[in-house]
Length: 147
Image 1: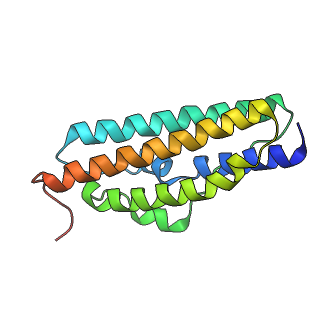
Image 2: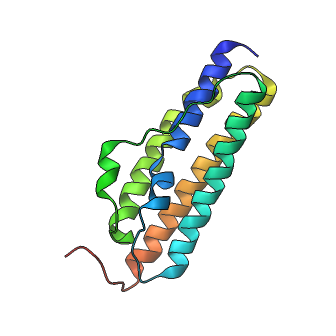
């Protein structure tokens, strides 16, 4: 595998590991809809498995995996309502898909390309699920932390 392929996978890993979805795993979103919070946690778990898979792949190729470094603006998102977080999550997920796509489509190695494609597809599916959650939340009468 060539170094540009490893660099592309490592950038993809860094974006996944530093995502808002991963950050919110420790930010305790608030909602009166526990099923929605459970679904959000399931998405976080799926992304965490993908992060491990990317990291393991890079380690097998003797490449040091990137670590997580969350943006400072994430720190204002603790203990806020899910209705406040979902639009931010969707925007971040859109950004993630847009930024993962060039790296995912530029990989020559077959196994690495398959993992990159899986990552991109997972990100797209998560975006669709977040959009569905936001739609369900906007159609329900939930208490909010916003006024």
